[in-house]
Image: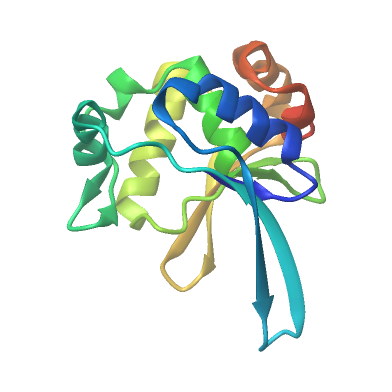
Length: 163
């Protein structure tokens, strides 16, 4: 688990508390120097233990070390799951839309995710190609009230700005 530091420190600490039985590591600051851009960034991270009981989830979401969307996402994606997805891989646009960063998935997978968001939560979304073959999902402003009622009970208060 990794989040930018210090901006998302409280959120990462809440994840650490939630996953404490699965880790022996305390959150640690990681500093990276990007020589190309001439900047230094910091993040806060911890790792979970490698445990056979977690292999099930790895096998659901990875194939040949590449992220994938399982065919039964509709059975797996709950309100809480969507909240964590937004907190971890979501964002907010200048126009106040919530974004799910799904760049690592194929267009077909992103369309499938979009259909699950509609099926499970009645959210109407749109997709956009940000760079060649890298798609993201937008949850428009007109869906905000519905989105908030679905995910806000499960979100860390420091991440509510994303919805």
